[in-house]
Structures are given as C-alpha cells and as structure tokens.
Amino acid sequence: MSCGLSKALREKYQVRSLPIKRGDEVSFPNHKSQNKKDRIQGKVTSVYRKRYCIYVDKYTKEKQNGQTVNIPLKPSVCLIEKLYLNKDRKEYIDRKTKAAEKLKNKNTGA
Image (cartoon, rainbow, N blue to C red; front, side):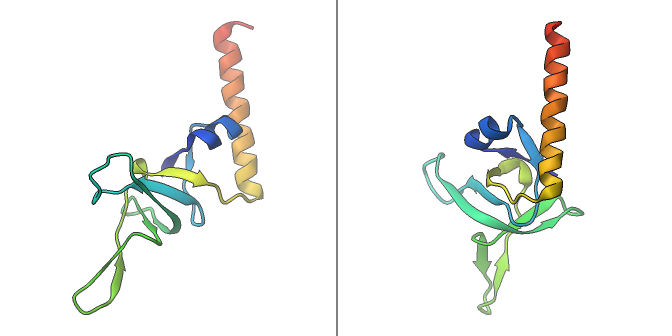
C-alpha cells in the first residue's frame, strides 16, 4: 500500500510515492470542512493490509457508550508529510531513485 509524498519530500528524495508505515505523519482532506484545501495532519497508528486501510491518531469518533473508535482511511487519499526513516527505508529510497535515474538516462539516449 503506497501513499503519495508531499511536494517538499518529493523534491528532497526524488520519489513520487512510498509504501506507508506505522510512524509516518500524513495529511488527509477534512470532509467536514467546506473548504476543499483543508487537511488534517496526524500520525499513522496502524496499517491494515488485509482491509487496505490505515488508521491515524487524530481521526476518531465517539460511540454512544463513550468509547472512541479509529476511523479507517484509504491510503490513496493521504499524503506523507514526514517520513519515519530507518536503515531499510533509506536503502529502499536509494534503490528507487537509482532506478528512476537509470530509466531517465535510457529514455534520453545519454
């Protein structure tokens, strides 16, 4: 399950999208707002691959008995604002950028 990167991260890492992981900070549209550009930011608490959804800490609702429940989000709607970087993820980004550069050079004929 991949998620698009914000413009700043796209320029920094030269990658358009990455698989989403627990610990990433994402932004997603606020459906309650009239303004289409309003976005809520939150941290990913869990990734549910079987249901193809993610859960964010600030996106919850309260049940009638007072218990709070996380609302599932589709990753295609979200943008990654801040990456949770570890050694494996850095290597993955490096591989992906090298492959993109190789493809770009192949297409230009250089």
